[in-house]
Image 1: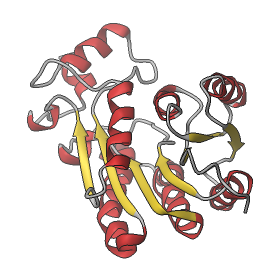
Image 2: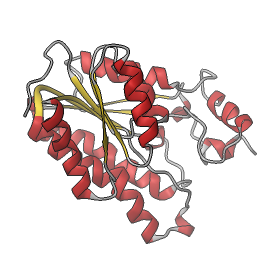
Image 3: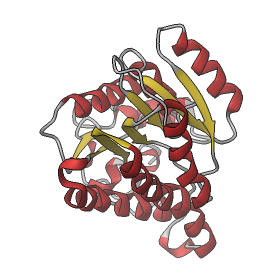
Length: 255
């Protein structure tokens, strides 16, 4: 394992080439060296690496299909072999499809579980083997785990399991690795969602605002810098999870 630049901790962000993952990479690159994971977004990953390298960070890209648990395990080992012990790992990669309980499809559920639950657990296991003594693991969740509704049923079940893993991992690794989660509400346009629907969904909260990628990135850094945080999940949704919505907010604002 190579020696690491001790002046800068090392962060691995899965799904780091685009959207929320890229926002976290950009923010963290101010003080971290970054390993940017991607699957099919190689051009985006390389462009982002060049961008943050110009900021003074060391940045490298790593391709892995997280639906393959062997590739998920190898990803962490490859990062450590090339860049040194990992200090901060953000499980951000996710896949997202619509279903409901009456439309439940076992094959779709297995596909979603592979990326949204199995891969983060494989990555956490491997991270513990190569992590620095100050290691922090952050799982990206969803505010639905605090305000369930039956939309996006299989996706939601995977996130509920990942929520439970925050507690169990924190208990298991104790002082060797701190574990936390972030549960954002509406942050970015999803799929074929219209701009109007996104704006209404984002504003449908107690404060009239949702989360921003920059807020989420700052929260990752806050968890890293706050040594007493362990086994905690931070919800970023303007209080939307307290509104007892019976459906996903994107459908609520259409009604």
